[in-house]
Image (cartoon, rainbow, N blue to C red; front, side):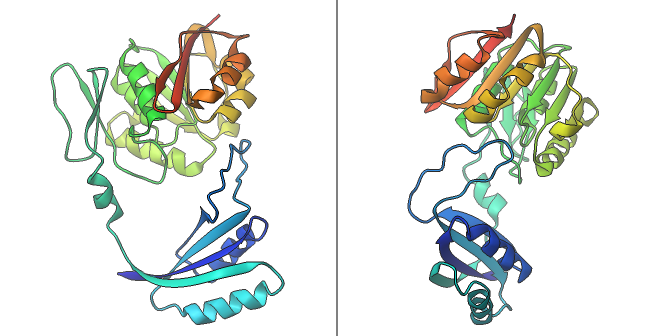
Length: 292
């Protein structure tokens, strides 16, 4: 199957309205890309931040008329900044099969395997988490997730309750349960993340022990282990409520932190947590400590 892909460059104020207009014209998908190699730093919780010059990519079915679509867009946005129109016909791809070419079984702390379906490892004295690509972030390939999985697989989680704050795919919650945790609470601002978490829990037969919530649905309780693999800015903004989720003597694991952000995150949590030395993988840091 093939598709029409329409690409337009516009400014950050117009891009969201243009994306909505493409969607109203029955675009199959609309995405943003950086048009000028401009870094975008971390947004606040719940905020979407895009680039000053943004490339808006809209995908349409092949029977759509790109010329008519362009005419309607130009009429609607007559006085606004729309440049560099490009229309291409692109072939469909089997995205999951393409992903599998480089997504292979991974082992953490000689105890935990994370494997795509069909490549499960049945090595003695290990557990295997089956996980396939999905809409929500988190397969274990990114250093931030790998650092958290390494910590979980290196500690005794037997009969403990864990909170996975910013759960994404639910990989950390599911891994903890396979490693012996009693139950896991998974929290995320994205409903798709909760769906992915529940699907992955079902796939790994731990669905009865995973509870997934949007933040406003979650009634805080203190737990033995809290993992927050998000980004430095929300970690700092949420330092007090995240720290309050950890019971006295419990463990807090923070990731999604670039090396240069380490001191800022430490400063936010020092009133509550005694930290071990930071652990680094590539440009990313894991902080782990114990609640006073």
